[in-house]
Length: 576
Ligand code: ARG
Image 1 (cartoon, rainbow, N blue to C red):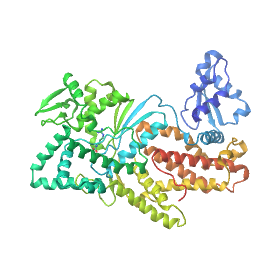
Image 2: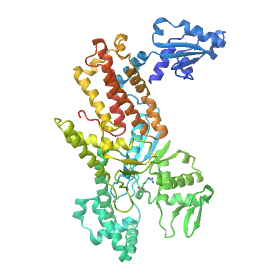
Image 3: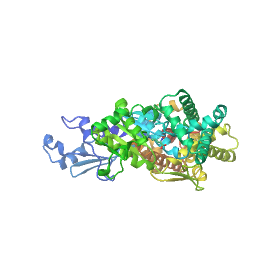
Image 4: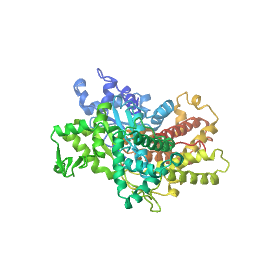
């Protein structure tokens, strides 16, 4: 039961009205117009008939009828204009929420609200034979965080890496490889080798335009199932996937499907036929298009004048397929804002085709990523490889660790958790639509709003718990007593408790807005609140009767930080 429901039940158990059940009372409770009045308000208008009294009188009489023992659970109970307002005693709130977190541990905040609903999430969606550059970071980690939060709330999330594995560029690669390629070198150098021969192809084609014809012919062969073409293509694909798997692993990113553009190559005809039959298409400059001028958009091109299908055609086929296969409740596309128009066109075509589910398709756009020195990912060469950014962040973390904590063992493994976490946390810190600029100093700062700051806070909490020298599972078996809870009678504790109570709502908010930064901000708030608590209140040296409640608050902080970071794909080092 969620903490709010539990609190409603507590209120209900304090009220007794003939023929009204606790559940009725609990269902009636609403939020008062202002927090000053209380946490919950019971409108008494419904009871006027049964009790044959005015709501005003009922509210006042009910307030009187509550027993002294029950009254202690509340800071105030006030009757105003026919409403009975309840404000929980902060220590009662602490008792409830700590019991729940310590019992559920990493399961705290989980729910079944999404049961029976499937959410398709298209993220990362990399292009075969091309390296992952910094621009792929956002799609990959925003999508992955949403995927994890959906699962936590009981949805059936389907992670889809819609691979860019089809198109004329594969004709170019095949020609380039046949002319200059070497299999041993390819297997050794992997994706960079493919980039190299691809660039060479473009250079050479400037003087030998016939190469372009050869590339078209090679792609045609691939489409027609030529064995040699398929063999090379498969090697390119396999090598790319092996290479990126290392990055996905380090980022804790998982996919349920790798069906990309090639997969939809033979699934476009029925879609095009359907659009033709619905009279949505027309021929324009020898191309087959869906005109969208009524909606202020350029036409959606389905078949080019040379007979080739396009990215958009495959996306339409993919949408049909996903609906058919997964019967999704929603289908998200975590793709840069540069593709806003593309998705608006796709969704409009689906709507025109009478697909009611077109309204369930959501483009989740995000801004550009660049480095502080002005470097940016561009179409021509000069790309910042994601791997390089991650490696550099790890190296810098290692340098920091060596100077801050020279005695630590396993420095490299710790630096990996810190360095990778720093990159991911920073990229998820701002509203996703904002462009972001990376600065290693900023993302690795131990006292900024960064992963290292949060990770360090967790290490601090862990070290307190370790120094308690108790078996945590047994230590908290018995509920905290009222005397013990008095250890939390301070404003730092109250702030932490109110943050803990918000965790489930934060997760729903992340999904409502498709915005992992809500969780990032929240984790920062928890870390800051804990550090304040830690500074102002003794824990290990606290008076004996306060130790357990303060340790419980510390343990709950650790649980929430770890779970929050895990949902973002970030590790929590045990030492720093
Ligand atoms: N591969 C594409 C790109 O790098 C992104 C694909 C996004 N997903 C989709 N279904 N269109 O631009």
